[in-house]
Amino acid sequence: MVAKQIRDGITAQVLKMKEAISVVPGLAGILVGDWKDSSTYVRNKNKACAFVGINSFEVRLPEDSTEQELIKMWMVSFHIGRLAMRGRDPLFVPCTPKGRVEFLHRYGVEIEGKRAFVIGRSNIVGTPAALLLQREDATVSTVYSRTKNPGEIIIIKQADIIISAVGQPNMARGSWLKPGAAVIDVGINAVEEACKAASAVGPMTTAMLLSNTLRLSSQQRGHNFQ
Image 1 (cartoon, helix red, strand yellow):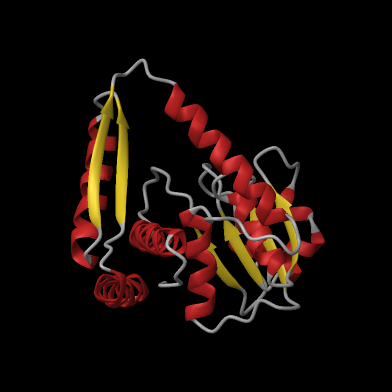
Image 2: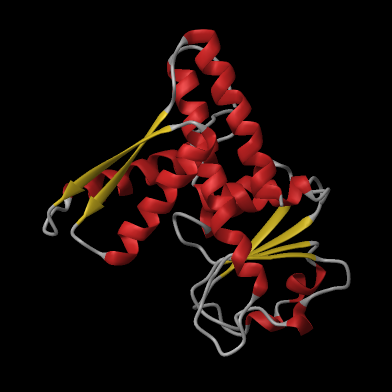
């Protein structure tokens, strides 16, 4: 399992960082209100942190808090801007698209010079996924929920890589795909037939969150553990 391999590598780097500079990375989860799903999400992240040796913290805010949402939006927009600029590196990359591109690397899928198609344009998945592929010299095209007749776009049938990141079931069809194309489905929707691929999305996203935490913590101290 790719996510476990990454977590094992992070565990080793966290221990190495602790031994070298006596510092352990920390990750804070901010909860606004008392949503059960959010509490479960943060609890699972705490377990993942414990697995790799990262300290975890929870910050709980009342339901009517809005400042943290604004801060999150600012941070995502700021780092997407740096991601889009050649010669600039963002401090972090959103975890879900970062994990999808890492999947391609781990399975030996060549990106440079290939045609890539991203379905979706959200700030936290679709847009950064397209930018990450572009950074690796893929030729990238994007469609989204308001694109008319996406199946009629010829280039999608020529794509070597397709990342579907849209909250709409059956957005991508098998008839669109050329033989041998690498396809990653990020969106999770309630449909009658369960998609086994969706089970890989959560663990890989969590692994990238841990990776970002380790890298940012070490960079703050002038090191490069990752």
